[in-house]
Structures are given as C-alpha cells and as structure tokens.
Length: 229
Image 1 (cartoon, rainbow, N blue to C red):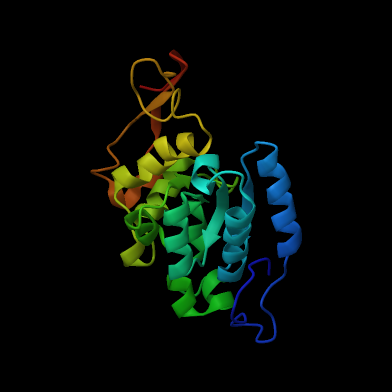
Image 2: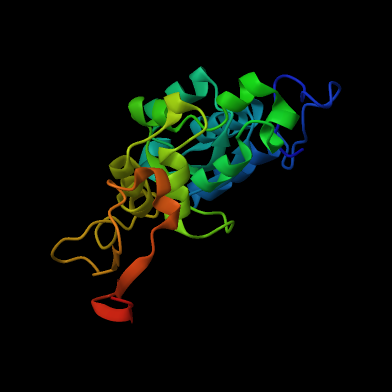
C-alpha cells in the first residue's frame, strides 16, 4: 500500500498508506538537489503524496519548478487542487498509461479504492486540458508504448480518454521535454535524431486495437535496425 491517501483504503479502513520518504526529509532533499542545479523527480501515488511532493517543489526550488522541469512519476489519484498546481508550476506529470490495465471493473484498483476513486485514478484528459505537461512512459510493465497508447485511448473511464494523437505526443515530444531533450528528440524534423518507427496499420484507423499493431520498420539515428516489411 505505497499510495498515500487522505482517506482510508476501501479494503483496509484503518490504513491510508505509507510514507516511503517523510515529507520533511523530502523537502530537505529537494532543496539540496535544486540548489545544486539538478532536476528532481519523485514517485507519488495518492492525493496526499502528490500534495507533499508539490509542497516540496514549491518551497525548495531555486527557480520555479517549471523551469527546473521537476517531475512527479505516476500522479495517480491527483485531486482537483493538485491538477491546478501542476499546471501553474509547470511540474511534469510523468505517467504510465499501461497501469490502466488494473483500473477496469473488479480490478486491483477497485478492490483497493472502490469504484468512485478508481474512476479518478489516472486523470489524463483533465491533466491535459488543464495545461499540465504530460509525459508517457512504461515503468517497465510492459514496455511497449503501443500498449500504453491503447490504454490511454481506451481508458476504462471514458471521460479520461485521450485521442491517438494526444497519446503519441505524450510518448514522444512530451517525454523529450521532460528530459530536456526536445532539441534532439521527440519530433521528426531536420536537425534532430532520426529515431522513428513505421507501423503495419494506422492507430487512427485501428484505435480500438492499437496494442495489436505490429512494428514494420525501426530507424535509430537514421539507420534501419529492423525491417519486417
């Protein structure tokens, strides 16, 4: 139960989750890192955890958090205030849409949180519409970005679904921005690394089955490293 919640777990009424790092220690660590000129990222799941990270970023940053491009990994169960603060500060929401595999009816999230909170676990549409910087990644399970695109486009909560274009941008230009790499990665244009794939079907035409689309061609830094055409 590593999600730190303001209200108890549905299946454990006496538990609100653990602090892996105490908020006071986190603030001190963020202050030291930002004073040294480092970008900071913290994993935060649960409304109380997200609020604590935002507090640390706002209180301890040598510059505004958006300029430092501080990130929060996961950002699950963000409340309305957190979404507003993310947008205002420019903190990047580095999220993993493949986690939505747990958010379906009778899934892990519903068991732990109940149906109402599960519907607001991953608020991608609201984050994007609020102007939050959105970066998609995998967290290693599974790593295939097409699986993540599929889940973002076909999220269990219809109100939180993204378009195919929005999901692809979060995986490409959004992720590049999060790593200060937008000058060399994230879009296909002159002067940037030619890292790209060609798919064997259009995700716009097969939006309900993006995870089943195969890669036909992979180019890394301008060189073809895989060709299954």
